[in-house]
Length: 250
Ligand code: BTN
Image (cartoon, rainbow, N blue to C red):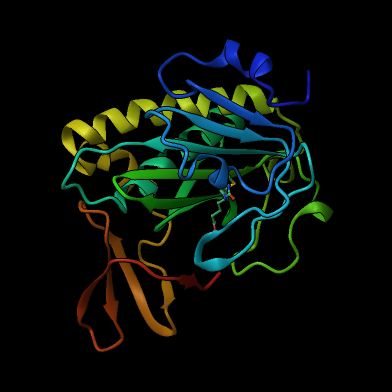
């Protein structure tokens, strides 16, 4: 196994439009930065084996030891008038299916952007909007040992390795992720999130859990067909949440 995500290693695993062109740096600050402002066509991706300034949601950092993760950003030019936050869920579904294909365990999606395995976070999505383009960044913890995972995270992290005791070929995982993401993005373009709702609803991690949303306690009801989260407040009022930080009781 060649442990690099260099294009010549990953290209045999690529099938469609996503991955063309393929920008690769062995190390960079953030793959998001490589694509934002690049003017590249839809399907362009940026990949690295190590980020020195990896970006997470809500201004957090995304850290990994070199050579342990799948770190990719994908350039999208979605049709006008669409609800773009849905793209994080589309990417999360693709990542969840990729993880399941690799580890043969059920993965869940924690609204709005995390992939969970055994109640721990194995992947995160960061979507950044720039004009009419969206750069969707996906980070998957693959071969980290327990000691190599971040100590301080709002959600306990895991890697595919800590979940199963096995190491994985990151290039094959990246190929699988991109093929799935492209297929799901095409469904989303044609049918919206409704076309993916079966897979999404079945993997809704928060459904029925006690949660804290931006400091308020509630119970998560479900991810709705428009990508928002329905919650029931402790005063038994149904509300929908557009975005925000949701913490859950383990
Ligand atoms: C989160 O869970 O907060 C989102 C994490 C997103 C991390 C990925 S890694 C590839 C891409 N480049 C970045 O700097 N961030 C995203």
